[in-house]
Amino acid sequence: MSSRGRPELVTVAIPLLDEEEHVADQLAALAGQTYAGAWEVLVVDNGCTDGTIGIVRRFDFEAAPVRVVAAPHGLNRARNAAAAEARGDLLAFCDGDDVVAPDWLEQLVEAASSADLVGGALEDEPLNDAWARGGLPPERATELLRPHGFLPCAPGGNCAVWTEVARSVRWDERFEFGSSDIEFSWRAQLAGRSIGFAPGAVVLRRYSPQLARRNFAYGVSAPLLYRRFRAHGMRRNVAQARAEWRWLVRMVPGAIRRRSIRARWLRIGGRRVGRLAGSVRYGVFFP
Picture 1 (cartoon, rainbow, N blue to C red):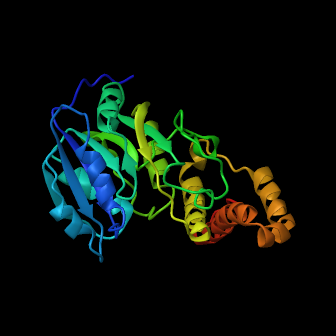
Picture 2 (tube, rainbow, N blue to C red; picture 1 turned 120 degrees about the horizontal axis):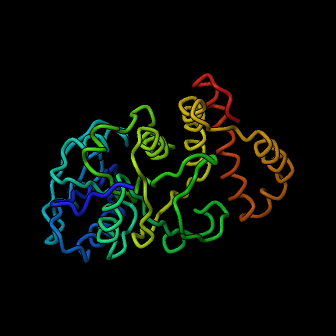
Picture 3 (tube, one colour; picture 1 turned 30 degrees about the vertical axis):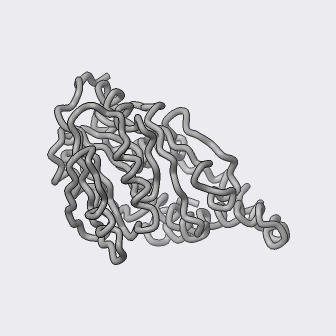
């Protein structure tokens, strides 16, 4: 277990790409943080073409100084740019379309005193209807997820990592969307870094309603993850893949008739088709 104490300065990094519809809500939530230590906000412009950055610059933000830096397009390029530009010794990440709880930063900092990387809790219900959740019931994470039954991971939109760790491990920029936070968390742990959970650091997560596109992108990334980590113990679950493909075929009539079934069908189908596409792209079979 790592023992690091408290940071002298925290950098809260927000990678942004065309979030003019929601970014003011996140900025307002950050402005109301209860954290009493020194912190800054680092906005990473990841290629915005709308009014997002204008909203950031006009926002009356008195809680902490705000800086805006530019990064080449790509989420992990934005994260690496944030690590390079951070003035704080602890780096906390949130997304522009989510909403952090009032004590979010306070809770992350507390948990980071005993770990190199910490993840917080995600709550799905307040900002999403059943369609956006893909037919899944409302949930709030009570522990770190273990994707694919392997190591735990910290969610990229609700985590804190000590800046020197972020700079040494770095995010793999080949992961353009899905699995990027999983890959970083796993590689950090395999390098001997510790990971922890901050159950009180809550983020209200917002999903895109484009279920097929979103889940296809998640699916495409999984074979690349498998190619990277199969030698370390990541396994395929072929039985689950077969069961879900059978369900998709059987439920075609139900998906046509009922919206609730259609949401689940698009979520599962998008991921499964994405995995096939990713298997072809990365030359490894991960159904």
